[in-house]
Image (cartoon, rainbow, N blue to C red; front, top):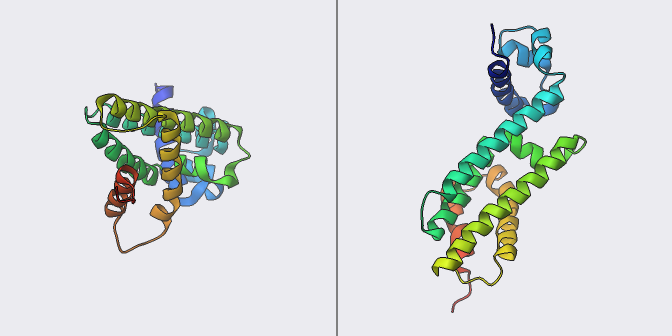
Length: 193
């Protein structure tokens, strides 16, 4: 007897690779079924549609992102080190979790109701995580901030603005070097004091 939840997970993981390669529009149920060496009807037993599979893929990747970023938050007592790790791991995860990234940022998928809910959950989660790190930094004397909520929003806005150039534009500097430069500007600014 096949464990239904384990098989659903197998479908999600397989579909994730296919959606990453071809995108939502070009992926077919037949490709997903073929990757699992099954017929389409067996996939329809577990999911009603390609959209439902995509939603499950996005939910899975959202959970991976949340778990990994939560690990970073707990990885040290040094808020500066945590924020540095957070920025790097966040950007690298978005590159790796391309289905989630596309769901959150691709306006061609706006017609799916679950996408807007996923965007809202993501924004709230990220601002809360960054605010917590900033709050810890203020408490420990590492950071000098009056409003951690506003600062968290500013950091998140900066990170979102960097995604497109980091992922799509090829530069002479690698991603790590570019992220280090960005983090230094976030921490130390550019004005001489």
